[in-house]
Image 1 (spheres, rainbow, N blue to C red):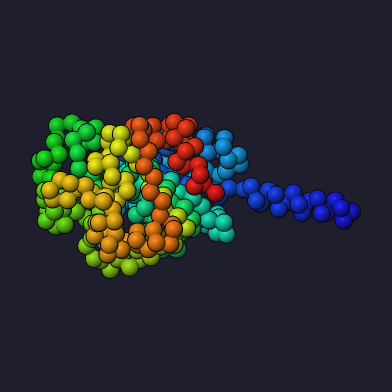
Image 2 (image 1 turned 45 degrees about the vertical axis):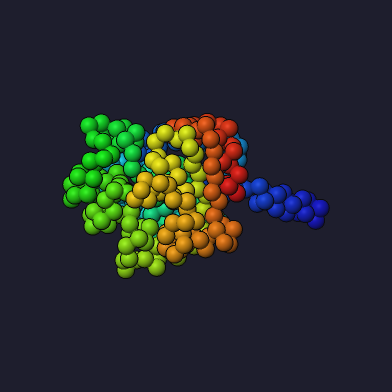
Length: 286
């Protein structure tokens, strides 16, 4: 009897050891949960038994709705997931726009349960470039897009909320209602919360690469961006890092910030190619 009980306890310990945290996935712009199915399937193939929550709201054209509206609704969904996993917590993957909005979800949810946050080719420092713009607004060019995005109408769109024109920083700060606030570039009553919520993470993983072709500059996936001379300022030299606006410096100094650069990966391959998924995502899903 005791031998049988001992074997049962051993099997229970083994099952707990190999169990993986649930994963919450946030899709990109102009797509939806169905576009992330390959990633879902690969996670469950490599890590059998993993529970994956594939966020299904704001697919297609609805992904262009104001960022704050999307973030607040996604926060409610994430809270439902966290309520199901209060002890072990979960991991979170946000792809493209979903990585930026997913990060903001954590910032407005101060007692979130996310342990590892993976930002997969996301415009964390903003977006400025024709290639991305023409996917959504074919008639616009980056040089003059600020005339639309830095207006009340433009700020009704998610793209306008993180459009960061290095030639018009004054208008960006004046009109943008989203990115300069979640990056704590402009102070708000929630500034402290926005920083502390990210410092709850065990890990933040920032993934991007020079052949992405959509995120512009591609280093925005690592919180780097153009200066006013159109040079990309390295993260460690940027004010968001040196002044630790949202905790990036603290995360790095404590070994919790992981910056991944991978070449020869186009934007739409990050979540659809097994060797990419296995190389840059799976090692961080525990």
